Image 1: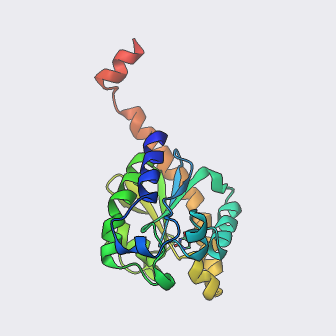
Image 2 (image 1 turned 30 degrees about the horizontal axis):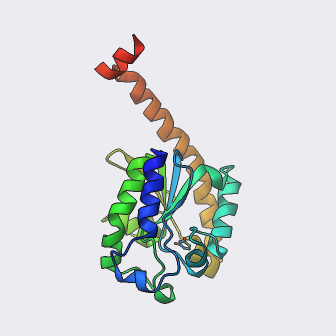
Image 3 (image 1 turned 180 degrees about the vertical axis):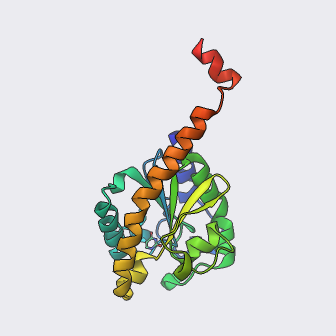
Length: 206
Ligand code: URA
């Protein structure tokens, strides 16, 4: 699984599927633990990320690290990526065609990592993974379950850097995240225990 994720990251670094390839220094596939319980999805790489090829290394990344630290989740234990993997010129909003071109990469990352909870940073990540769910000001900090996935929409740390009053909201929302992870994981464990072993699992028991 981690090999498949590494292959995917290599593919992203060489991607030419949309026009952003012309302005980027480096594509930013994602980084972190391939077996993470928590996956974090932001919007797009900024200037620092474009230079280093690593997500969330600028000022918003510093705030994200602090928020993770506040709930005792080391950054090394999460997987962080963005809905688009290359920096848009001047940090403008991602265009629909750029989001569409990058979609298979994000979908595959989620499928390979199988996180317990996916934190969605900002409205673009929310629109991409929870279309039709309503505005972020209404649903931030809540647990939204769709299919077999669990999401927590959150304000983007960059928004909190511009609007200081959002920092407290983000801190409070992050405190809820801990409980959500435990809840989703214990439910998954209960479901797994209640499911009879399939033929393959049964054979490996014998
Ligand atoms: N903002 C994002 O959405 N992603 C990054 O990687 C950095 C800043």
